[in-house]
Length: 296
Ligand code: PHE
Ligand code: CO
Image 1: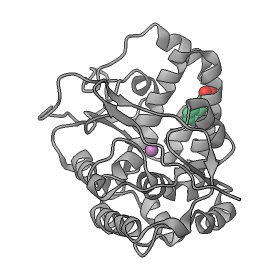
Image 2: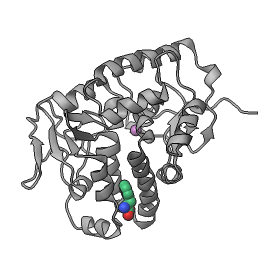
Image 3: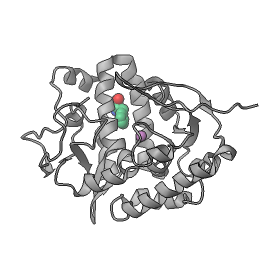
Image 4: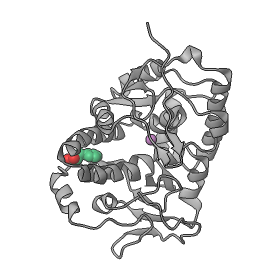
């Protein structure tokens, strides 16, 4: 007895974007996907695979292939879960939309990755303000097969549960780390700068912009600096942070953040587009096309 899961989308009102949170875990209603929904997956899949050749990091492409993700049809969570279980012990769980922070952290801390069951409508093919199946599955799931990244995601979940118990400011600082690594991270590999952030790999425009546009800053990874940096939710990022390896990410985030949160409380936030004197600058952005305000 399973009822049709709901499609919980954020509302766009005269007060702007209003997120709606939902906690249910649902079965993927795979048999109910329409021909149009499978076609949306196919269109996005083909387009992104093309764009990501030579742009996404090696681990992303290799692991996506290991899953056997293909344009033919929306993947079945059950089939991906067999591959995941053997490789890193992660499991995908279906959800209806955005989760409250603590619910999200609890899933990650237990090696469960929440995936939105529904896919965007054809008119949203180029832009959707919130995560849908394409972003979650195409963007986030491949790196869960990478042992280092799999551990990083779980550590983040555990760190989130802890930060939630400290105070709201600790969460603000931790969320910026997620944003600038898991969602919008770049990595330096032998053959050049590459993308690993899910928010970038699931967007055609930002895949090109993040690596090739002269507009954004590209700055070497620095934990404290990132945790102080505001970000954009409605436009491409003004700044991307570059790691040298997934080991660097794990090593830098291994220490207990409790004293760091206390230290950060006394320091001012940094605007999304600012470059500091002691930044390791890979590329200083021209700032072309940047919106003047709207950092969160
Ligand atoms: N070390 C962090 C803490 O003590 C946990 C964490 C690990 C957070 C990896 C983010 C990423 O809170
Ligand atoms: Co995401």
